[in-house]
Length: 499
Length: 84
Image (cartoon, each protein chain N blue to C red):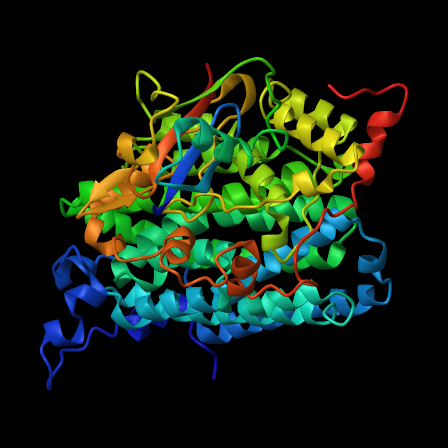
């Protein structure tokens, strides 16, 4: 017997809006778990997911994707790419796996929230596949680095990082809890799938894949490209949900959730993807600068998406565009200076040639961030490595939990955007981070950042050694300069002098 | 005498840092404690010039001899340390 075309049966099969008999509709779909906007059920009936697939089709395609990724890994594994890879590139891998692999499982739980509590059958159907996607992403991004653990124990942080109190893990957990596990299904559709997946995953999984291909890391390039094909599909959950919210008078509320999620993701990417692209990737292999990638993927594509659907660009868009020139340079400087506190070896990326590139891509870099690097370089050349290592902690933002940074040198503009709330002072890295807090203060107020924990006596001994212990870092885990300062000695070459 | 952790913004540096001081520290001692974590690490010293302390957004610096207690610094007060 011939099979029906999918379009002949899909709508009937996925429209599982049964009438509950033993519980009320409100008990089946509590507002807190399903839809904070409380859009009536019949309005959600119009939800039409743009990408339709059946389980049979899904499994066939996913099996082929996995076969491709694993076979490339198996074939190229014999080439021992990692043994000869630039240390900066190895650090990108360690940062990526530690920061992302376990969050994929958390994303799976967010998809599960939509699969169970989504108000539209189409959302529930797509999110079920999204849950399977994220499970695959978690597994594959733990499996791939596992073979490196015997060679380099920092790769063990692919599994360990998110279970630790490392500052980078706290920042990542806090951001994703805010857009994934701590929200109702409708909010997840907006904040995770629309704001995060249609914008930022392109940066990490396509932009970085381009750099990976340039470097010759075909395995990693192939892996993250494969993941992005899933992201591109389940990212489409949010758009039809946004249309329904706008049509039913909830544009303002939807806009706010998108604005919050976009900013939180941007700050996280400024410390993950920014340094990876502009400092860790070997100079000769950089396809574009971080800013150029951001302009292409975010300013170009996401801005168009958001306007097309009937939302406005976030109110802080000008601030964001200006941030593209600055924030990730400060984040990079902070990660490098506090390198014992991370599970990867940051590449300084500040050799004379790299500085020329930075100055070209970011005019004024030498007069600002370069001024700090000048002092660092002098200290290393003079045998004072001790002065290039921290003796205290940076203040971290009570929203993004990253160091509060600004522009140093001639354009010094570092600032604490603090707020006093119910007898406690909260410190923020930007006016937008403070705005996010102000939208729902009691949602965020109880959380203790790393500095709050330090001051509360939870970190003992109360010094940097105690902080490293608290973060779960053994001496052999702690980051060090990726190139053992070899880049500094390029300043001694006669045709190059320190700027 | 009690320890007062401060949120320090040092001129020309790129980051805010946690700097503990004692309540009887003078502003010159506060500046010195702050300088330890920035000067000669990421900021070049400016010989012959004096470091001063003010609140963020403060129009004028505190008197160099006044103490942390006299200045009324709260825990995690945000201060700027800069060359006069």
